[in-house]
Image (cartoon, rainbow, N blue to C red; front, side, top):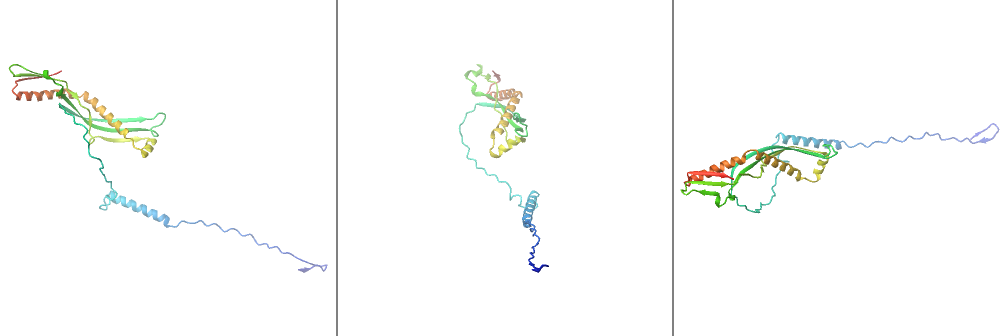
Length: 239
């Protein structure tokens, strides 16, 4: 309070002019160092462990994560027995390279489609069915020194693929096919390649001369057998 010139007294109010407080800076919470160090150390140990097993630096390490094969197959069941009366006079070994490609309409191969390169190896036999001969198939002269044998022409057997010599070289699949294989397996895709390989081998056997070779070898076998029984003249005829 102060006195004025006219003797009046007045009040003088003072304003508190305290400057406003600035908010404290927000401190970001830092992750502990061990959250970065521990994964890096574990990754390094795994890599070192894998390299040691790969290059045999530590004995026994490679077998720790090795694959094991367990045969849980059941016993084989005999379903039928078939009597055979054929003579296999020749057999051919064949090999074919199958390039099977399946595409989808309006989609590129990278999205949908498969291409399999497969090497198929198998055998085809040629035989003479002796069970088709009858009473009139063998003719002997009165002196019992000459004999004529009439046989059916040789036939080709079914192609038999050899799993030990057949293998898949490569198999390319589209994105959708790869995703589908994650949820289910498709044995039909492998079956199609095997069937095509068997078909190609069977077609090649028809032009290989196996049946002629089988007929010649069968005639040679019968001539030797009948001559050992005392026949001087042996004639094998195919009809």
